[in-house]
Amino acid sequence: MVEDHGGRAAWSGGPGFVLAAIGSAVGLGNMWRFAATTSVSGGAAFVLLYLGLTLAVGLPLLLAELSLGRRMRSGPVGALRSAAGAPGLLLGGAFAASGFLIFSFYAVIAGWTVRYGVTALLSGLPSDPGAYFGEVATGWDAALYHMGFVAGTAGVVGTGIRRGIERAALLLIPFLFAVLVALAVWAAALPGAGDGFAFYLRPDWSDVLAPRTIAEAAGQTYFSMSLGMGAMLTFASYRGSGGDLPAEGTVIALSDFGVAFLAGLVIFPLVFALGFEEGVIGLEADQAEGVLFLALPAAFHGLGSLGRVLAVVFFAALAAAALTSTLSLLEVVVSTAVDELGVGRPTAAAVGGAAVAVAGLAPAHSLGVLGLLNTVAGEIMLAAGALAIAVVVGWVVPDPVAELEKGAGRRIRRLLPLWLLALRWVVTPITLLVLLLMLMEVAA
Ligand code: TRP
Image 1 (tube, rainbow, N blue to C red):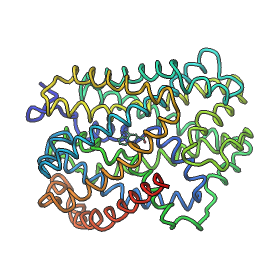
Image 2 (cartoon, helix red, strand yellow; image 1 turned 120 degrees about the vertical axis):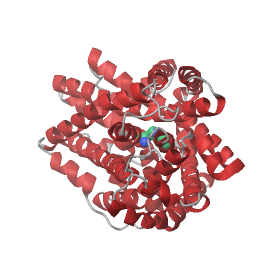
Image 3 (cartoon, rainbow, N blue to C red; image 1 turned 90 degrees about the vertical axis):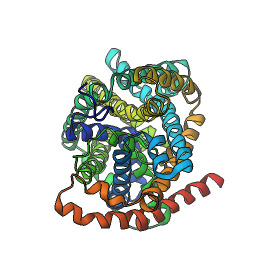
Image 4 (cartoon, rainbow, N blue to C red; image 1 turned 135 degrees about the horizontal axis):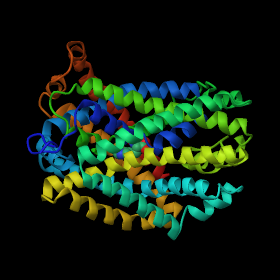
């Protein structure tokens, strides 16, 4: 068997692993949440804060997950049980549960992207995106697209790590990058694009160091980098011990940041140049789907047949980004079933997919349920999971630096004690603060 290291499935090598992990990280979170949050939270000032948090919080946490997964060679339940005994077992179970819950609402939104793309292709997007969104966002059609997306995800995950997940990332991630770069260059040349840049990046320093803004940015980092529920941990469990995890983690973190930033460079100039800025001004992060599903379709519609082509390409790229993310969400559930229950991979993917297809009926029928799942699983459970990872790797596991030293270059090895310090004294307190603020917001 090729796809094997010590009896366990494996990536073809470093690039395959890095690409799949970028695929997990880069998703709908990069395309809507980041741009919307930036525009209301300080523009360029927020971008700098977010980059700082990506490096000071996201990257140390990512390396913590990667090192634990590779060291234990197991999905979240097995890895955390080996690291922390019975409490770890519960924690791993909670991770698989968050993967399941996030998948159930995320695939509904992913279904919208497919729906928009198909409509643009077949008949063109309608002139009133508000009415259209109201029609397609909930109901049996939404449920059907959701199920189709879940079935596609299960098909790829069931095919395997290397022939399924890695190959999908290899095809889809370069496509996504190419589409975004081309659109950004094209949008920058539109007359009036400058107002969009000014709005997106207008630096406002007054709020960036407020605890709320920091918490908002950190919460966005966990979600965007797929941290706090064992997705990256699971991916690293399929990585051989020769790889340079610190270098690979840095590439993953910076790519995730880069795509989020780039998406804003597409969205704002385009929306402003075409005069649909009322659709994005003053938007809160939790109304952020308005950018993708209302303001942008309006702008595409205003461009006539060119807009129709752009809409097809753009929504195809969004769906591609979403798919490489849902692969990692389902993989956490599947690897748990394979490792702990000894179920075969295709069976686990089919059963897990069927269960998510059913669970998604609720968010597919109610935006309220969708928002609730996002808050509970996409925000609170991730922050709690991130805190748990920081504590387990920072304090419980013996000699955490040793695993990252394997395969790392000498210069990076000298920086690793700094990583442990950051994990203990930057990631842990900030994540605790984020979790408390999130809980207070829910209680209020
Ligand atoms: N990171 C993805 C995005 O930005 C979503 C995602 C995939 C995710 N896997 C995850 C989020 C695991 C949290 C945990 O869209």
